Image (cartoon, rainbow, N blue to C red; front, side):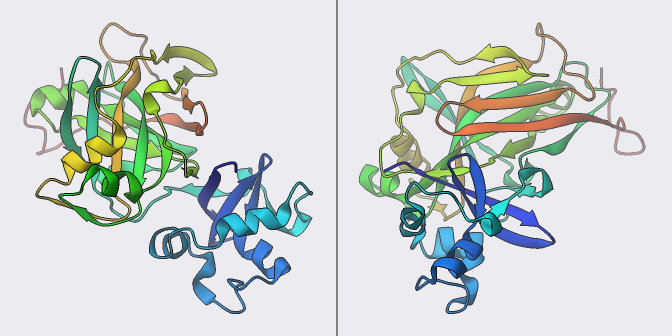
Length: 299
């Protein structure tokens, strides 16, 4: 069976759980109303909540819903126009963000990021205008569907509800001012949460970074020493992880930064991951720092 591809969008002022089917974005609530399934909105009021359906109920009934479509055309009333949707991050609010850098011949490096930095697909990306060499990292994220603590490898792999492309920015001048402060201050996750029963091998995925439609960086297919499950199990050692937390690997491809072409205001940047989709946004230069909080010059 093809993997489920789910989106969390705001459409006509309402949060909508959507499923991608044959290249179209469909409203789950409208599909279930038409098919009169056990989980239809008339019987279960919270069926349309992305958070409730994906995390609390563990994707309940969504595969059966897609089966109802078979190979037929989606009913017109279920089709959503992506350009009329505000794409929301496909996880819970305020997740933990844990980052691994996979290294072929060594154990992966590990650090914590700032989960509130994550924006959705097609979001404007406020990059400080006084950053001369902002860097954009592209990677792959696993989103947890279960709570974990000191998990075994089997428990960690079972806890993954799905995967999505992720992008994270680093602002070198802020990083120089205070190490850790400039890393991953801004990011995106989405647009789709791809849920699959098959084990996903990110080291075999093609990851590309595009600027204004042109590929500027791509990943190399190198075997990793640690799998996603092993990274998650390691992260849970003596610590609580919760449903909705984001475990990201990267950078698999990098744009900008020292010695690379500068990313500029109005540039459209995209992360393309084979099998997971494309995540995009537009750089919007924000005002430089000023006032009493400027402890040191930016450059």
